[in-house]
Image (cartoon, rainbow, N blue to C red; front, side):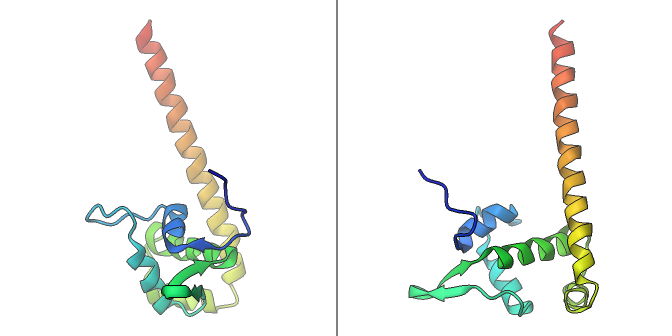
Amino acid sequence: MTEKSTNAYKTIGEVVKILDLKSRTGQKTPTYTIRFWEKEFKQIKPKILNNNRRYYDQSSIDLLKKIKFLLKDQGMTINGVKKLLNSSNSKDLDEISNKTIRADNLKNKINKISNIIKQLKNLK
């Protein structure tokens, strides 16, 4: 299977996987979340082609990542996110969310290494 170029448009299902969205009911691909965000945030503009299928470019995916970060990780309201995205401070958001995402990734790596060390100590 060949990988899509990073510049290629992604389907809504691919975007759900990129964002690692999960539903409360265990549904594997909660595409309804992205469709809801589309209605709420007019900045998200997917290409809608044959059979009403949505295709997202990298800038839309980046915007969806910011929205997810603010709503899910920072606990903001939809109205709060709208105000922030429409404000002049929205550029600062890129730096804040990227630093937080990097910090979370680092924490995950440290936890994995710590678990491996514990397992190795138990082998003795």
